[in-house]
Length: 591
Picture 1 (tube, rainbow, N blue to C red):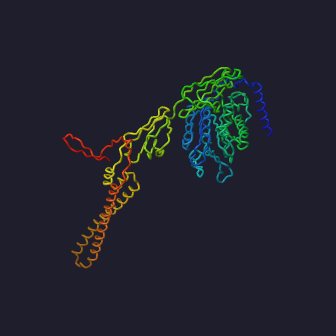
Picture 2: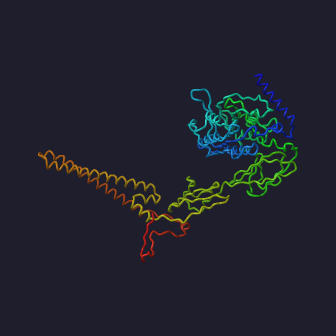
């Protein structure tokens, strides 16, 4: 206990010393002063970011996806995580299989001097291990099932295995979910000599910070636009408030201390963030602000400057400054901001978010010209007749009338089935820009009684299937099949009975005592009579079903066709023309 108290006092004095050395308004960098490059700490940085709002079997969350987006922005704009090194998975993509595959990718791509951040925003659960008093925590993917946690979710034991298989030097899990059973493997250590940052990160580390304990609920609030945990996490990282010694480096103990105290305050004790180590390794994890070796830190940060975002496309995009949505949209002209670093995020539906960390110099204007790549277009189904069934990329989206559908940039296959019309070929639609794409159909060919009749004449029920009456089709088809099989069975039996009867007659004629053969011969004869009656009955039934099947087509109600779609020009089933050999009739029936 005495040693633990000494460690806390040591850290407090050290933190205060840095604060006195570097007063507010002038930022210094420890790495800059020590002439240590961030690359000396980590060769490369990777992240797996997961956010799930819409679960299949769990209650939906409101801000998990937004939490994930903000974390991605913070890591890429401020802490040097290359965008191509971040795997971003949300909602329907965040299946157990996809998340496991992402872990495999990290295991294959990372090297021993790399750093990895794994962020998860979603549901978590805790349950007792069978036959033990210990808890085990589970992360719930989008397809997780409460009654099958072991099979459909990711347990902390699984997470621990994955973390140890990743060769990277430092791995930190940030889990915005409340659960217990963290599978700790070591005690938290904070008695490090903080003036040698390289020494802090020379050893491996496997650490986890979670939003709260088991039986606690994740708190979300529209005012924050995030959960309490992620709101505080972003504040600690993006605003560098977790950097208590003001040196541009945030270590795990600093981040956790900031998160725990501020989440407790924000939730009024409703959430208690937890920390543990997943291995016995003694290393640390360091978030290194990529601007700490910049000469800009020698600039006096008192006063304010201005931010301008011109009116170039996209017009009317939403703007976040330091993760706070402002009440203005692009174009933004000379927005007054405090001097220093700010993270700017610009977003518009249909475009990929644009984020950049900018330095606002006192009395000067910083101009951002965002390059936003289109990711979505809008497809309109207003030209389709009602009750048209629509499939996009093999997935049914319902029947018209339908609202406009937003599709990502790229090629999409759309299939339309319109009642009363012949099947249409698939429509290939290429989304290239953020415009409205009205769905254009080829010439429609109405279904006709002639085609239906010919189908049913070939196979009973086929015409009803063509007429889009599956119940009738199945009924006629099944009845015809059963009666036909009954006739075939009797025909096979008849052949065998004839052979038996011929043999019985021969035995009767060649027998020295004919009276003994009469009974057998007459019995087979009687079976032949029964077989003949059954065959006739089966034939009559089949004929009746076949006839009813055709009458049903003849008396069936015609489809209501829309001349507007076929322009009144319908291909005829009967064509009259001049053949190569002279005048004549060409009669064709299309199936």
